[in-house]
Length: 538
Image 1 (spheres, rainbow, N blue to C red):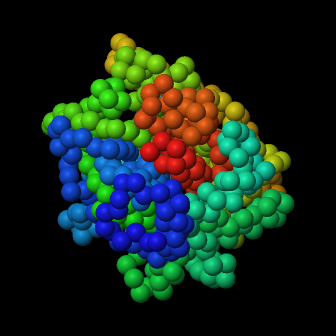
Image 2 (tube, rainbow, N blue to C red):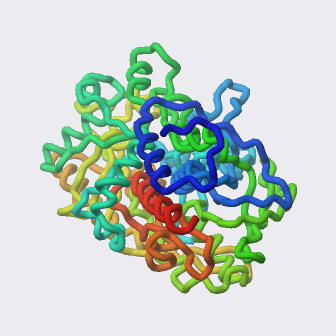
């Protein structure tokens, strides 16, 4: 029973929902991007289900609720990203950032912000751009802003954790149901695929990754191809020169115009096709309060592209799903608890936040190991030393357009440190107590890989990529997780039990680490949780 785009009956049976869910999973071809809503949401509106955020968890919730006959309105702080700019493209290039690049900044803040010892950030006009570099004490958290959330700006590495590591990731969740049902469902829904190894071995654009493989294997580390949500047929056509270049034009950090299967092309497109899901971009939820009859009053600001609030709306929702990402959901819930809007949220709200152990580094290779001037911006392989050293390192691109003789890596480590969000009444903002020194365990774990490779190859670390004589990118994370941890801040399915009808369904549920890139786990957990919620709560 494939969704037809027609409205279905609100009392669709659980069996019918499950059949519909299963039959949708075979969609491997790229769908057209989801249209922005027939919105924006009106002041005084009443909606059966309000989803705050359009990232992985929110997109799953919206699709499955709609398939079950529930009308859904999604609130998104960022833009729709469906209209080309003056250059004919929706997103700008990594090497030429403009106003589309950053969320309400007047200067770029690239994760790799030096090259050959020179700063490379530049001034830009203030605008509601696609990448937010949100600064807290001790760490910068990179997040996607727009319809599609983090799927707009990540590298698309769609990794399912090894089953033996799962108990440490989500200890209250049954691994069998995740690996038998929900991980496969997530991978199918996201359109996950893997590079053709033969093409990988022959194409110029992955020379950098082949050098990384050679060095890893010569030092005895397991090398692995990593699945991704890029359209690999499209990338092969890019390399052949028969389509407009996207990954081979360095598009990644500030969005990808053609080949990447972001949520706009997968879950959100299918949600829009049900006819039951609408989206309000450039809207920000500021409060959620209990209302009569078990519903909730939701206060929402409408924004312009300068980030100013141009209107304030009050709507009523029967159910509210918090899906604003680990940081967005955690900040909002901490604020609502501290200011008395939702005072009965439990004491675990705001706790258990981690950076997925992210650290970056570069290595300077010998002249006989060039990494290539042409580099695909989509990583597709990694080095696995998790069991022995607590680190998994993706072999990342440096798509500068010139030969750098550098190998670059984003490591995910088993860093045990966790931070907490708290309300600062003096500033009226939420703080995070992360300390840069807490990155040291992650650095030590990454060094179990790269110290050995450097010793074997006779190479050194690059010291020019993150500052002046600075080796480690220990100031950031791309993978924020936690803050409303499953079975602690919520029940075992994301319910905020003190307030029936309120749910968390995003990366805030995961306590700080997934051992790999996290979005497949976020998606699979959302699939698990929403199926239970539909079956028992609606």
